[in-house]
Length: 148
Image (spheres, one colour):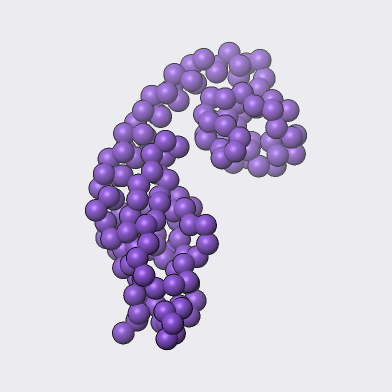
């Protein structure tokens, strides 16, 4: 089934792209969540106007993301956790914990934008990458310390 994407979808495409997807994926996920439109003849005619609107919106969002990346560059998030003798944490530090730490400092960042391969289970300092936009990332410093 051919659809027109209204939002960026990871591993599928970006706004305004005409893509082929499985019928069930389109009907059950993309269309109900307003991430895409059916590629009907009427929508194909609207695609030219939609791409202009998408380009303007993209420029604004990218500018906002670059501004936020500049503000996040000097930020350090400190998290305290209980730990054993060999600096192994009892539990872990997840993207949600980092998001809460950023929110405490006045930055609203969705936990899904924080790129962690695995939860952090050691004490120490870590560089955390945040994907703010398709082309813009920010790096913050995370300090995991022993709970007092």
